Image (cartoon, rainbow, N blue to C red; front, side):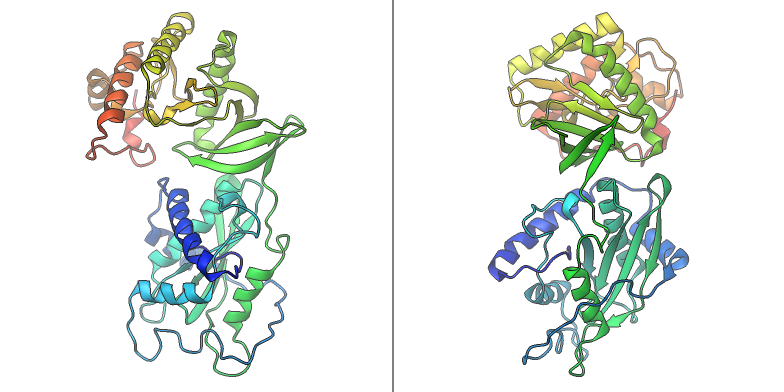
Length: 415
């Protein structure tokens, strides 16, 4: 669950909390290297303690009792996680900046509600909260740090996750503080939480999301998706009103894919094809393209014809093999055209190169070559078989086949 800004309408809250849970799962869905437990251990071992860095907001207490005077898990009670979270949601409202849509680009702070064991939070709980903060920093390219709140409604601990080089992070945390009113004076935990929720965006280091390429400023409007190698946004060029696609590498490991895709799209631009993305701007880790597309829910006969004809031209005129023809890489523009996207894994026919591509759709001979550690023959039949198998998976959607991530299967990168 996300902690951001206070919202007054309780009836609106419950609907929005469901949205936050859904989007949080989407934002965190891309696989990582560490487990939550490992990440939590690293925070505990290598993080450093800090004092509360913000000027405290003055709290004018009303005549009513404090909000956390009798939380449901005091006095030996053992409520369920849902009961604790429901209690907390009744008291706090969880939203992004007022007037902005629910989008990771607009997130100001994050938080989790977890039960403590032995007067402390589990490493997995710490890791989950911190991972959420890391994800926010990955999705907000100009931001330097973000706060993560971890609480069980009785005590609170606040973490600050700071971006270092190449999307590495450092961690600082504050001492445990109470949220429970025992006297007329609000407890420190309450003061800290209110201060974070009511502080200015500048004080919380939130900046308007944008990137600059070759003197052109692109404002990032919303997050679209997060894949194996990249994060994709909807953007708007400076002094322009048309939307563009901004694709940014997750880290240096994938820069070769971006260089490859840039070179391929530059070559393919000679076709001026409505079924291929058009590259507008780029650098080593960012591609700006048109058109802005949506996911494909179904394919028509004309779509398949256009895909095949486009591949035929690319194969014969440019000797390129796409290597990643799966449903995620077929998109539709506003004119109804089907686009073949994500050319970062493409290969030149006959080249001797490391393998990368859609394993779940690969031809049997390619899979055998990978198993036997043999050189792969990159030829157009790979794309044709991948296309047919992708169409089958789109039509039948077998639940037993999962999308395989190269982050989890390094053995896939073989010659």
